[in-house]
Length: 463
Ligand code: SAH
Image 1 (tube, helix red, strand yellow):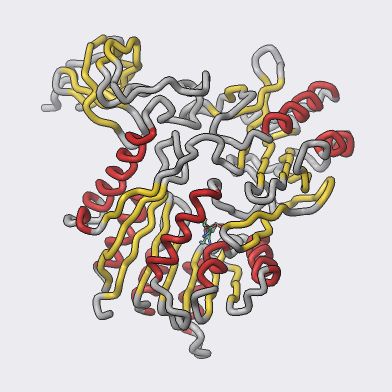
Image 2: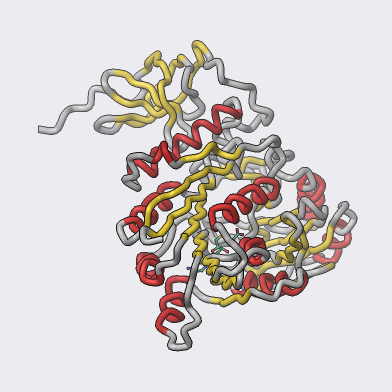
């Protein structure tokens, strides 16, 4: 017989928060249930009210902090508890780092089955600047109940927009940019996109800044073929310090995907440039570029170290984006081949090789899981690899790709990921197919949030 739930909605409890969940919720216990409490912290004593009870656990909301954790800090942002962007702004930064390192460790143990992971994990790379670190923002545009234009970020787990004038983790140049855009929308009565009815024009504003160059890009995503009075908006935005590129992207699909296929430049260039280390990169609106450039350099240094290059190796950089890691490694490798699915990113990668005078790289457009097996079967014999770098999106790698890599048997695989769970899953698979986990290190690319980047080195058992 099913155990009857004894906890019900609206029950209230005073509990001690003893652990943290992967989404940054505090976890405490009452009547043998685990209670997940948003905005509560390990070390807090809190009064909570049950919102939703399941069989063995429940979600509860924080009513009152009875005794704050000694690690609790006042969030800088007044919207921190509402906005879905920062889940950990109320936590001392050192504790945030410990939390992320523990998360990596837990994933590698539980999902990866690496029981002695403590022996290989190295201290997480923290940052001296946990605020204003992001070089890219995507603001959804909408209207509130009174019809006022709203632009900001989504509230946690919803698509309701929290109107934001200043974001503490974003580049500060966003403030004048968004002020100009909101005023323009008001003045010319431009419609804002409404997800529910799939009507209205302006969907998102994407901004990007090269931290090393100060160059700024603004891309306005519209559900239509043109932006009325776009030249007036471009004229106003062009006065913002550092502005280099203003474009309009057309996305008429009924989708959560932010960018559509077609981008037209309204003013300036179609890209901005930035530096990571001594390498200059050109970045177009649809291309991926790491969001925290200061920490990116440290991440790439870790990749370089794990790759153990001596100057002669053949390296494949899969999921290469605009060729950032490829070019970073090329200086120490024999040759580097990059594979990336977004054609504009590959175009950027090729230009980036050229403007940096790097000749020992080649880039291919395609899905890694299709292109790599194809090249492997190719009789030209080109596909040999000493080192493979993997840096996939959150969902990780396709099993077909992992099988092909195991067949290729490079000496070293450096796997970079923003999701320690899928990383652990894929690392396990590779370790069941010839590899061993040699090193693992977190890098905090996303302070104040629960997200963490991880880099691991897998070495071939025969090397
Ligand atoms: N290594 C790069 C990019 C990492 S982000 C950097 O550090 O900047 C992951 C990249 O994988 C994105 O550029 C994305 O467009 C690309 N991508 C997503 N799915 C892919 C696939 N199936 N095959 C190849 N590339 C893919």
